[in-house]
Length: 173
Image (cartoon, rainbow, N blue to C red; front, side, top):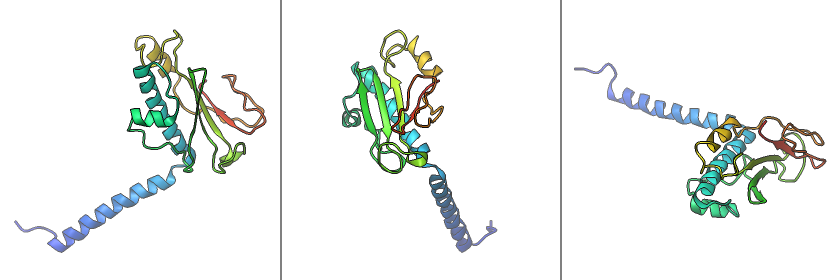
């Protein structure tokens, strides 16, 4: 059976199809804002931290320890290419921060700091990820997404206060 298109045209069509696919992917990546890329990185870190806590009964002391445990965590940088700041307060509350576009504390707009805080224990006092019957629902009921970004000096419903340093606090409702 004779083909509708001769071989050179089929090759050209195949090459153009691949080129169009690569172009679409490239356009999609350039459209995603640095804040959205930061959120994705922090969400992946949160999942890895919860897995680490479920296996070890404690929070990782630093992000390097997390990478050795969870090699699928590829990026420890925010959307602007700066390292994320990881802190553990009282062994149960984790803070992950991005200094924003300007790489300096404080700022406003795209230069403002982004701070995520989450607890590693559920309402019953058990480590997240180890109490699937009770704790998993509580974790899913308050998804980890930026609800609001605050101007300096204002507080949100979680009681986090951004203070005068210009940080944006992003927390669960």
